[in-house]
Image (cartoon, rainbow, N blue to C red):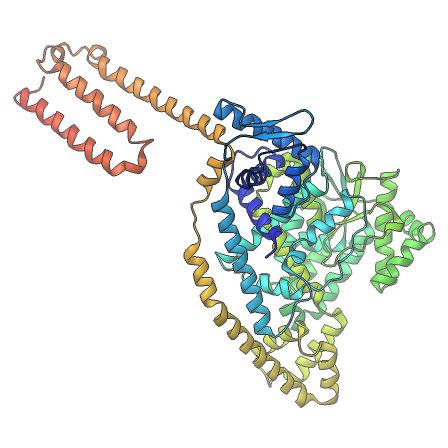
Length: 636
């Protein structure tokens, strides 16, 4: 089992369940404490350099903690534990040497054991998933989860990144099969969040407090209009919300409006005849219309009112004239234009993307070396990995989900706007949908397949069988869409038979998978413990929790004093002189004072609430009965 997956899950648990975390540095304190505790248990109580601690911690958790950060965290831990124990039980000297006495730091072994068990379950489930489908994954769960960090690295680590062409379809479909599971999916989301948090260590991300301009791509506009996946819409609208709140400028080229309108109009014409894209591609306009219950008229309305919607609903600035940028794209940036023609397959689309990058480069006006001085970005909501070419220098284009992650990592104010649970859900769901979408063949192939379904299979196979068959084809385990299209042209009857066979195979695989994981999932449900927040809070920052408890007790004390003051003075305040003459006057007030104390103590000691209520109620009844009896039942 990979230690990094456990580390991801553990860090996410710390981040999600501790209000005492002030910045990302604090999140790594528990990891350092665990490392120190294990060193102590192994008899390693001193050393000549904190590099020895770094080596131990890095090996334990699969990290590469920067030495300056490690030094800062170690001094913070030393200050905390020495204050708590009133002696120097852990010392970090000026030369980097350290000394631990016979003191065991607060450890997180129980929590780490739980996260380890969770990861073992996930890996077991993935193994069963692959076995049921009869395939072998070429990549690991760790590589799939770590994709986002690879995308971030080119904006902060100043290096090109490779590996974007790897096949992650099996991991994406595995994660997708558990999206509605209330126990398993939170484990998967923690892996995504933990991977993102570790990016903070490895990419040296600094605080961002600059104003940026975001030039929006066609697919970003589709996301705003809810014409991509639900995850895309969430991401794009979140960028709009953050831009409105933090003063980022949103802009769009007339060229992009042309391209967006043409795409919507083309989709409107094909909407009624599309089946495969609607069922398979969560990022397609067809899938979005099916999800929202929209028809051709809705698409035509959006197309006709596009400028109005962008300006009035989203306050997007439309660039007045982009002719100069188009001309520069063709002639001054011809190498970049040629590159886009190769990867886009269309001169029109290539010119659009090059024009957008030219706008960004012109706006920047100088050489850019990192995100902080970038000024302007071409923000794309593309499902495809962005091909970063080192020869063009620092990138001008960025994916929308990558942008959200950078803003969250680098701006403490934005961290308050997006909580970790939302970010992990948003990010992982988008990673799943874009991976599935990217694995599909080109739209032209799917359109031909849709035509063949409509022509030959409509009256011979039901929709459920078509869905299962198309999913099976998309998994690339048996044939492909090109093969099925060729078969339809050659032998329509065999085409229908092949679809029925693929549907049967997929149905059997699904049944086999869910049967094989039933016992594993049941075991997970039985072992999971929901009460983790208090445990984490107490271990991360005991001083903070002690301070909170002190404040609570002060509040209880003030309430007791106010109530007691009223008790001992109400007969004076209301001039009830005869009450003071009663022979049991002091006994009644003393008993009432005791009742007040018991009642207020029941609040902080609520774990024993049955005991306190059982004691207080009879006591009050006894006091009242005695008082009434002693007065002969007459009013005083």
